Amino acid sequence: MSGLVAHLSATRPAPARATLATDPLADPLWDLLWRRYLPQRYGDGVSLREISRRTHVSKSVLARHGGRLDDALDELEWDTFATLERSFVDEGLCEMLLHRLGSVSSHWRCTRT
View 1 (tube, helix red, strand yellow):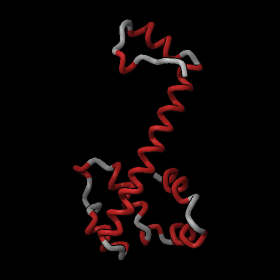
View 2 (cartoon, rainbow, N blue to C red):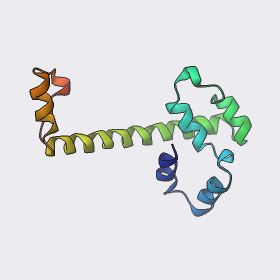
View 3 (cartoon, rainbow, N blue to C red):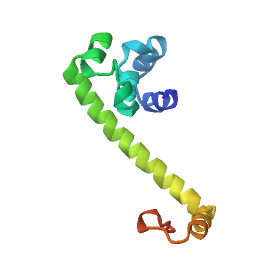
View 4 (cartoon, rainbow, N blue to C red):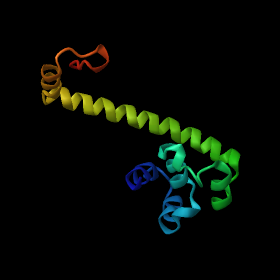
């Protein structure tokens, strides 16, 4: 999580980064990241109401911020998958997996880009 916080904070203004560094609980970024990635069965404390109470940010602002964060993280995840796939193809890992597994569904078939 700390790597995601560092990545997502890099584009923030300096005062916002300083606030996050000095008092991480005052910024909803950590809470919104945990809300996204923590399985629901462990989700105690990550409702918008609870995050709002801790951070003193309204639920509507949190919901909007969470939506933008979800979009940014979706894009980051797709970019990461594309990079991994290119790396796997370039290193020949896909061919080795196809050879080992025999026939593979089209979903897992690697192609050169």
